[in-house]
Length: 172
Image 1 (spheres, rainbow, N blue to C red):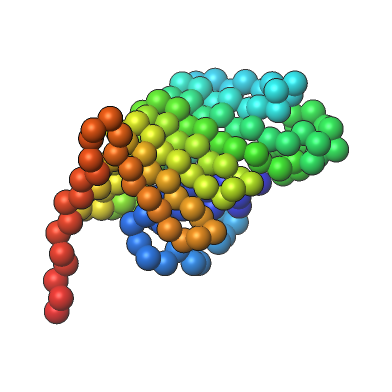
Image 2 (image 1 turned 90 degrees about the horizontal axis):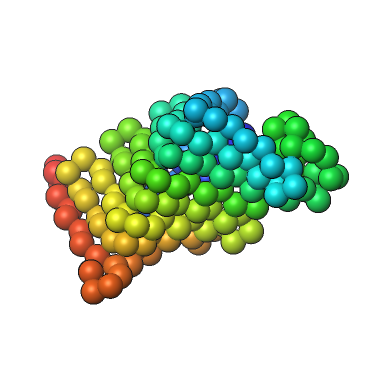
């Protein structure tokens, strides 16, 4: 489970900003999640972290108001919520809500909400989505990252267009 969560978080930051993400997701380093509260709802197959949520692994830091982790109870043999925390069970989706910020090094992605769909291997960031690396900035209402296709799409909405400000690097 830890490795899957890191894959999710690393791809949200890296894939839209660089062309190759292979090798970025490995490692068995722990994921530290802190929040004001943790609620487990076995009947809903849900673990909810709420209030000043901070997720850290290596140099990746994620902040949000809430983190919802939905899992497939059937895949862990119908065990209670303790099964998911021990690595059993399959993550169906992860939702980050409210003031979402994902940072890795100089790269930052922000938005109102991010959702990872495990079956589709897709991440969608919505609501004033912004990707930044140094002075480079891309803005849109919706950023979709297709993990298995190694591609991303940025959309505007409501008459607002996608904007990108790119500063070419030195060619020396």
